[in-house]
Length: 273
Picture 1 (tube, helix red, strand yellow):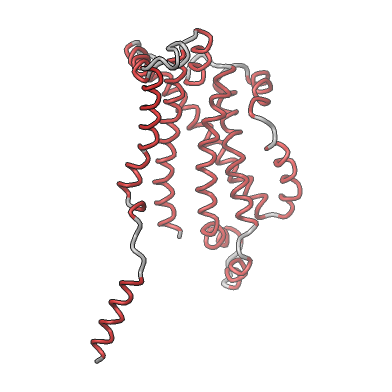
Picture 2: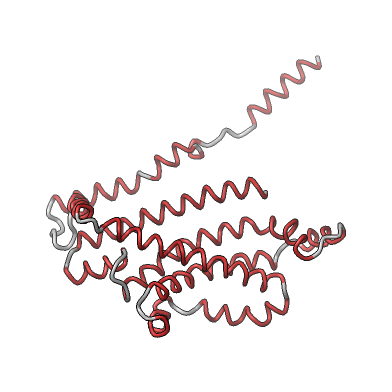
């Protein structure tokens, strides 16, 4: 009777346990991510091929591909991509590191929160283009001004999310750590840091997206190479195909870098959570 009861209970548990959704499978998510872009390209091809939109307003998808092939053959496309990626990488790294330090000061210290938080909230409201004239005046039209603008863009998402997370760490966890003799760095490393790891990763992902936005702002107004410069130069020369090419490349680069951070997020969460 005991074996029969166990078998019945096991069968009932199998019937009541929810089946995994097919949308949670990796290959389904990957394939599903291509549905909308493919549909957009199909509609794009239809409206350009049928003549609904003139070529000078919206070139066909193949015209955009041909523009990319032309730049590759001239050896310019990968140079634009490499320069933009370098600026984003350096600015993102610098801005994120400074933001983590400031978030630790504001989130862990009441004095730091009182003195620094209001000023940083005010600076966060400044539009990205407002920084460009000042940076050019201070640093001239060089790499320093562009990287600094990207760093400013990366700073605020990381600072905001991490500082708020540190301020809202469960006080009972902190008190439990102190009862075990944890203080200062040991308390931060053992209790507070694991509690804010998801916020850190989320802030980094937001900062990376913001870095690409600020990169375009920097290269539109003061650059001679890069994808943002290609947007501005193509507008002046009327090359709509190159404008669309630059937009597509920025979208692809943003997607690729975000995917890298997703892998980083999984590794970090496995380590700390």
